[in-house]
Length: 507
Image 1 (cartoon, rainbow, N blue to C red):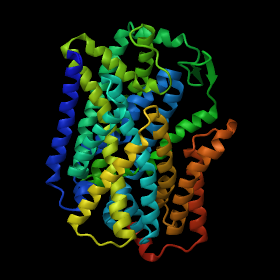
Image 2 (cartoon, rainbow, N blue to C red):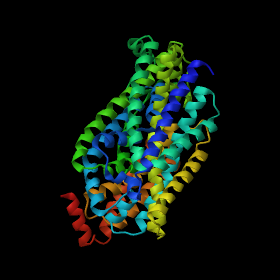
Image 3 (cartoon, one colour):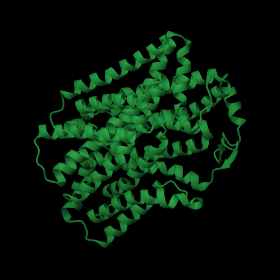
Image 4 (tube, rainbow, N blue to C red):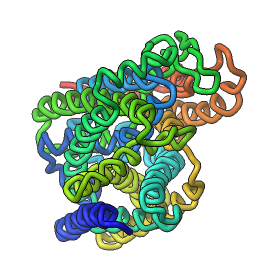
């Protein structure tokens, strides 16, 4: 191992060590499950904003999005980003304050718990919501572990499985120690590291490509690469039409936010509802800038390839473009190697900030919503905390098993899990917060139909191609929303107590 590799490794080890220290620090503050899962509702506006967005973006921001732009141009990546920006703003503007007020009013500390208490249902909604979370969060977490494995195996030639397990152990360690406050605090730090990584890579890659004018010239030379209505077909070397169906499919990514448990939990955890306005502004600005820079990194990466500094990347290997650029930077001297280490720590940050939040949400579903609420197993606070920590460990083991294939696509796994949550929880959340006529039967039918439709559309309908080739989130979301409305109207009205709670939360 040469000096640059040693310095990169040292920078990354220091970063990982800091995460463990934070977890140990906050382990002393967790005296109840409310502390472990919501941090006692003590988050400030800046931490809330950056924690929500860091946990949202995941390794997709620094690996998946630049990889898509590198391969096929800005069209696919940009329409996805536009959908996510609008979804982010709408979620903060319409949902955040309402769910913060409503969840505190009824004493809910998890998303399944919120649905259960909102609709005065003891077991049915708790059970199905908890199952949905586990089903879709395990592959989501697996995508994060896969990104870590790719990072270390690409950079240091480490065995993929060994690298992935090492990172998983660290994530599990600080999450099980510190719970929600540790996850949120590390998310804040990770968002800062991710920002440093994005800015450094975009300027360095532009320089190595011969300047930003050279970057744009290289991109213009490829048919459809800079178009919003065409993509570049790398196999044929020609432009490929990107129609309205594709555009609406990518814009539909924004619908997913209404059902993301790890983002919604941040809204529930802020110390004061009024501070969510500040959080919204911070979060929206960060999302716009970070995604725009991530897409441009993919374009700059193409320029670096054309300049002969790195080899042409194909398939899922395109998702390592930032890793390749950081490796190139590390050859410029000791200071550059340390900076490269920070960049690569940024990829770890993107991965870990999402994985820790997902693990907490999944563990709460098992320990709180299944063991205690559905199966009626009464646990002391100490035993409940232990059950939560054991659940984090078990889910991580399953996720490691699912991520054992080093050729899996981070973007592909995330898109499926994102669709699952958006369709299963999004319509239910919107109806729960904004429609007092909705009831538990509509919520249950909506959750079930949304989750099932994701699998049906992805594996049975979408492969038919043509007009059916729509991102599964859009049809599943619309179907689940329609089911919620129809079933609620065909079944009994909510009782007076439930209506009164709704109106109080709406005031």
